[in-house]
Image 1 (cartoon, rainbow, N blue to C red):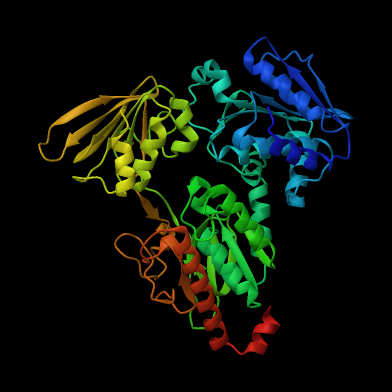
Image 2: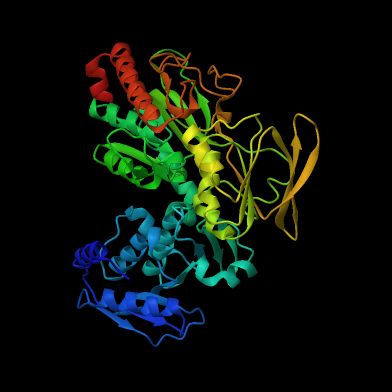
Length: 529
């Protein structure tokens, strides 16, 4: 099961074990059970503190639990093989069960250990889902830190009947005590916020107690990360308040156009940016959703940003890098059938539509790339483009047209997504030239029609916004409000690309530096830090 590279890596990691761990498998006579047995034997052979047992009695087969030998009440169960994107999750489960300390905020760990009540999680993932590992790892950590929490992590393709019975059409899908808990990516702090009702007020009080920043960055994507690195290196007291550090990177799989990096993946790059930011004295506040900006009354004064949890932060200079989100189609049925056939992430949810008929809405690069990837998995793809021709790069169009199970519809306006029994069963598309409508029967719709800037919270701030909602900036990233700058996909800067956002963020950081040194003497800045 493990190739030479994986074996060497795992052997190196297992050297960090401090206590014996047990792997207890529940198996049958299926091929997947044979593979599970082989995997566990290979892991056990790598370290004398790991033992594998095959006398488990769980109904889900194949499955296995990971537990500390000295504390059998704390365990996590993997149902199916945690390979692909989840191999790292398996490694972390082994390390944490074996006493290796997790790299998690101490306050969050104490919050996990202090949770009262019984919480039994079941979470479904696919091996190609790049959003699933965060949920898998958060639940794993919770189960291994608190005996009243259990986590069963289920690879969907191994338990198809279960997936169908529970009508799971998007992953990650998490259930708590048998009831739906959340569909989509969640980090540990988000899960705790849903379970611990007092945690939000604690976080708000902690944020509001902070001294004013010299530079506050709102948004933690490539632009925000670059800004904070530049201003921290200049010696300014810098904070980053982000709803989700990494931003849209978490929803991006293959990245092949970042100079100097032939290939990487969005979640990996997000992690690398977070580690880079962590090298500096930067105050990172995650899960912080900005809801209001109150600009300073005079140049050199303090701007105030208010957040959804009630917190307020003050700063002398402000860089807005809140990015953008997937644009909704805005037709009947879209909201009703979200996660019930309507999806936005082909890499995450594509495997759930194996052999089925789906549509991709959007003929740009994102839409055509999605159609190409999905065509390898699903039975048939109908790609619908509103314009009279596809807008994707020619090389992508050529590849798409070579696929036998793809139909391309141009000049097509999707007017409705239909469903029955709580799931998508088709859509209605109108020919924009003739006005003729037809219904396409299918089981899934993937929407890939561009981005919307995250600026709704700024409409009453006095900032200049375009009719598209973008923040208007000049060539130095300055807005119309002194001391307020903006960078990345949220601005009027053309070409919404990762590398452009990084450059934008760096420029905004340098502009904030220039603003600060020109509006207050250096010695006063030093005293305020």
